[in-house]
Length: 393
Image 1 (tube, rainbow, N blue to C red):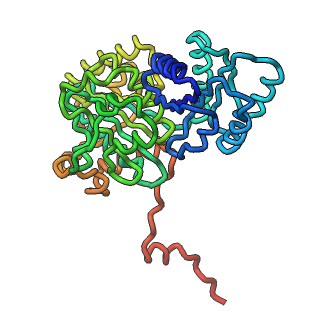
Image 2 (cartoon, rainbow, N blue to C red):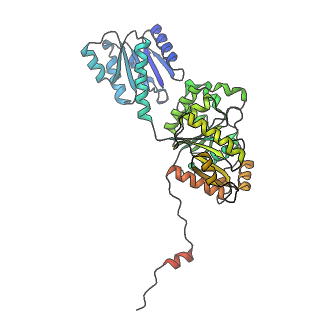
Image 3 (cartoon, rainbow, N blue to C red):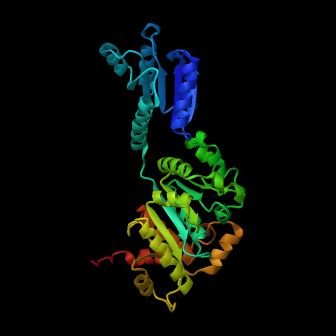
């Protein structure tokens, strides 16, 4: 959350800042010294989610100023810290738009629960139907990064969906290279290091823009920075990303640790990527057993068979029998188109839109987004044949 504290007492202001930062290091905490009238100087970029007013004074028209401010910004939650809480004052504070009245000086036992209540309300109010899709390799070389990055492009291709891809392969991630030849200006570790700044504009500006509605948050450029990313950072980033984007695609890589498992916990759908060879089948079974131990439901885990060949010795039915799970999707073996896409850093749907792999990704994107397949325009001969015959007089 973005929180602004206002107080005439600089010592109390410092104490409130300390309490709030101790509660949640990811929150952005700002302060104003002086009367409530100072809130009129806030710009649109400085507007907080929560405004905490320390001991407002009726004699200085603090509540009148607050009432005008609340009328202009009804979505900002106002908290008043007061030494006295008699009924007339509480009524006046309620009319001024105050959501919570707490005793002053306030202790963590009263402040923290109030902030949690406000955070829950803000999250419910701001929650969009953004879906989190996680791609994870059952075995190295499965093509998970290729599918994740190119599915992200396919989801955004219609122009109706805002899509973000977050590269969670913290040590050796290179997802951005699959869809762009530009160097990212920021990475996931940069965002984690400045988590106190996290807001919609900061998250957007940290992403490499592939199209106006598709951005990639790259993995750390140096494996040494992998430890900068903590599970709590993933919580904050994904909660915000859900509100900003229609789809958040995660390229999880192969490792299972506290950070990747936290990301998988947030996912609405997990796509383990495998191929039809025995080593993939063995590792896929191990991974599915881990997911069952984490109590992920069958509907959450959708297996994708990449480089699928209908004439393979191992049939899809054999895989489903081995895994005791259905195969959610198949992606055809189209090596030439995929290799050209990777080598040029251009999405395969942009480079080879008619290739079988492009058509499969577009179909998967439509299935996930609920969009209909585009109708193909008929040629002049088909239109001529479709005309009803004229009856002769």
